[in-house]
Length: 232
Image 1 (tube, rainbow, N blue to C red):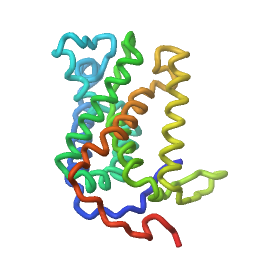
Image 2: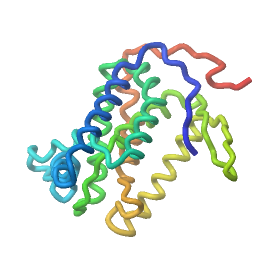
Image 3: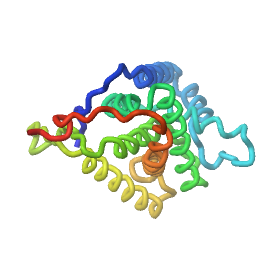
Image 4: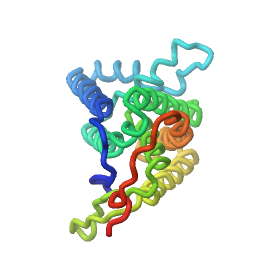
């Protein structure tokens, strides 16, 4: 299943969402022009390497923030930025731009921390915005469970578009991540299945669920539009 759009209207321009997309794109363009040796050094410096993370030494904590701006290829960054584009504007609208930025960075850091804690001996760099975006998905799940996600489902090579309630779409996504994460721990240190940092996704989503309410404290809920939730 691939999300195409959601049915929630944003009341304001999502400045931080677009800023994050542009920053991620700029960093990725910088990465692909480094060359193999330079790229390896860049990744080793700014991605999370769980085995090198020393919780007693704050000097090693930097990658908890920087890893979320690195990506491993075109498909990696395009899929992440597309998901942020679809779901980020509504969460930013609900929280406000500044709070959303802090929420995004905190969610990404907690996602990276979850991956490091569950795979403490791993020397495989963990990078990408997917943990931070998972936090955005967790907040979206909290704020807009009855919205609908227009989803592309390949069916015998034919395009099929279906509207799925967000609570089902995101719930299914989380369960699939949890299944893969638990399975990966039994295989080879938590990152064996396709080299994906499953526990960053899981940790990010849970962090988003937990942080959504306190970050929205004192802000007015958006208006309720029936056509956003019901197709008739």
